[in-house]
Length: 229
Image 1 (tube, rainbow, N blue to C red):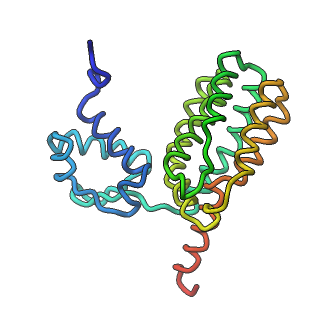
Image 2: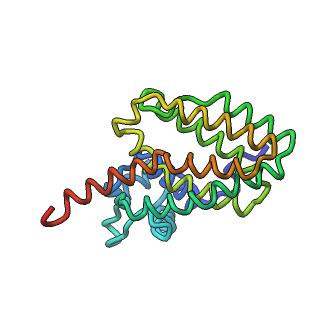
C-alpha cells in the first residue's frame, strides 16, 4: 500500500518539516538556518531545500538576505496583532455558522474534544496546546465552510509562535479555569443553535487568548529596545 508521502516531492517534504519546526519553536525566531546541515539531516540535496525556503519566505516565515544567510523571521507585535485581528473576525463567524449547521457527528466530535481539554499553562505545555487546537478545529469543521476552515487553520498555524510566547508569560502559570468553562459553554450554545451567543462568546474568548497576552509582551519588549526608550 502506498505510504502517505508517496506524492510529496523532496521540496514539499523539506517545506513541511521546516515549517513545522519554525511554528513549534524548534527553530527559534531570528536563528540562522544552516542550509547544508539541514539538507543533510533531511537526506536531500540543497536544491529542494532552497525551493522550500522560497516558499517559506513568501509566507513571511523566513527572511532571505543571501543564499547563504537565511534566518527564521523575527516575531513582532505588528504581525501578532494582525493575526489576532483576523481571528477576532473569523472565529466568531465559524462559531455562528457551526450553531446553524452542526450535525450529530459534529456534536459528538466537539463534546469528545472538550472533555480532553487541559489547562493551557506551562505545566501542561504542548499537550494542552494540541488539545486546545483539536477542540477549535471541531468548531471550524462544524461550520461546513471549507474556505473558512482553511483560512482559520492557516491563521492558527501562524499564531502558534505567538501562542507559545504567551504560554511562557507569568499569567500562563495560573489555572485557566475560565477558558475551560468557556469551551463547555460554547459547545452548548452551538448544540442549542444559539448562534448569536456562540459568536459573542467566541469573540470574548479570542480577546483573552494567549496571542493577546503575547501582543502586550512584545509591545513592552519593543518599547524597551527602541531608541530613547
